[in-house]
Image 1 (tube, rainbow, N blue to C red):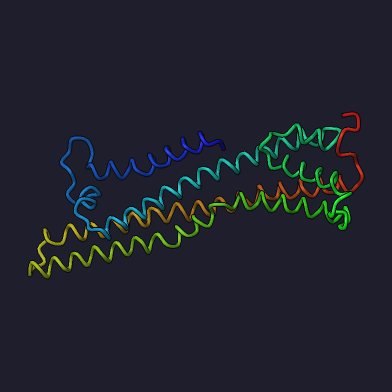
Image 2 (image 1 turned 30 degrees about the vertical axis):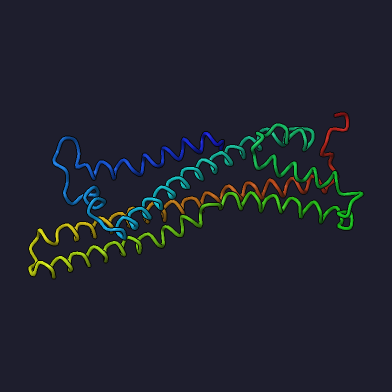
Length: 255
């Protein structure tokens, strides 16, 4: 994914996250502004309430950005797997098959790693390791690197899914505290004294749950898709390793 694509994706995620909140806060069209909506929460809330709200907005934006970007990355790997099955193994050498793959393909990266390990084994300190072990280690390291890249961001989703309800709960407790304070100052529990703080607490709860649910669902979906993508990568790496160690030519001697 290029830098331009990342910028566009980030902007789209921010708009997706902010648009519902802006619409809710505005109360829609030309209707009277909602005195208990997000707009009132932001304008009337104290430092802690605003901080909690900003934390959950950051969590939500980060969640959607990671889910969309990782879904696209996984889709690209699965697409490259189809290309590998039709174009790579039909070539006369591993190098030719590697050249037939897209430049950003992890399958091409693994094949090139194996070729490099086989070519630059002799005449260096690496020669102390037998060719079989050196090629195996090099390919396994490349597979682990691909796996690490695929798993990037999943820890954030897991953290958001497990902590955002508690962040929202903290906002809820803070809103209830304000409601009780207002009752104590006013000396009565009239609805106009407690509606604002109670509404603030309910909004915090809703935002916390609205942030946690997509994060948990996205985490589970991405983990499952990661497993399928890594199965393709590991199977390919094992096949390339077998071909290299089997003595089949990996480069064109006439090239």
